[in-house]
Image (cartoon, rainbow, N blue to C red; front, side, top):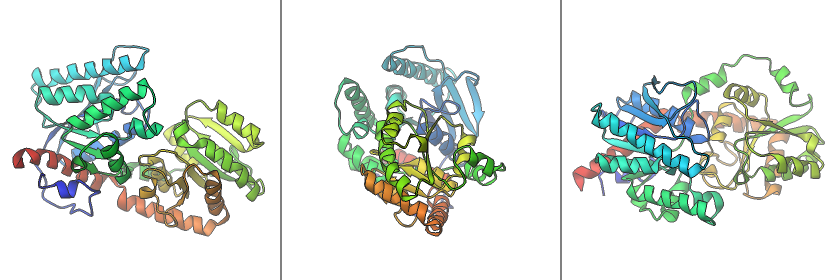
Length: 420
């Protein structure tokens, strides 16, 4: 066991931010999404973590996918961003294979032709596993893998060929990685169990929210009353969900709960569902329950639109069936919107019931409704929850200490070679 294992293998306790700086490292990062290409949570995670890694005196080269209108190479917040051209293919797994081939070729050129020397390669999820493993083996680099979620967790098991393929890729990445980073203790247990991974090589580093985004949240100047009128009448309180429109996010539970909330609030409530995806079944569900007039589906919102909307909302609800972390809760913390979440996955590690939000029973619309009603009917209590959540965001979920924790994982990987 390496000398840093005791520190690395759990959520790192309060650390000395003024401790001795490790030697500068050159780090390769592989991620299939990076702004302006935003598909899920990886994009924002990568974009907010690595500028802080750069400030710790490390050189970061991020290999990602081309985006129309963006340069093939540029320096962004200190990160050397390389966007590779991926051969088009309508079949997703073929496209993923093409992406890995392009990443592999580009990195090989960086190292072999341009004489770039790296110590580590950091892969984000299974989609870049093929290239990350090949590069780590070809150039004898330590492989760090951040596993943001598992296929098993998303679907409560592996049930078909597509899921088996992804699961095998996750298993291989976990096996080959020198160390694995996950975002919560819940995910630490899941990865160890589902991917047959030794517990001793898994490190927990929470997700965060950038200070720049916090400042943006705090310094908005617009007509809130006018914006609010677009979504609700003056007596109505606004409850919202934001995220992907998928079964695992439990939106159908929120619509079921909405019937009880509408009754309890004597009709003075509106529900706003924000996010991309197929909403037809959800709209039909609301219609069948007789509350279609109380539920609005907005589709995708840009960052600035969403930020403005959050400042006029009264309650944020995230009723997920599976949630490794729940970064959406942090975004609500930032805008001081009281949150109601399910007690699945990492949510109970992010939201403390009765202190920074309301935690309800997963897959239980009655419990969810009770949590929402508690927030809407108790304005002083809700304000206290939001204030405490905002303070906790700054104390526990700042990228500055989280970057130092990530650096410590890198140290642990490098130290393994000198102590083994």
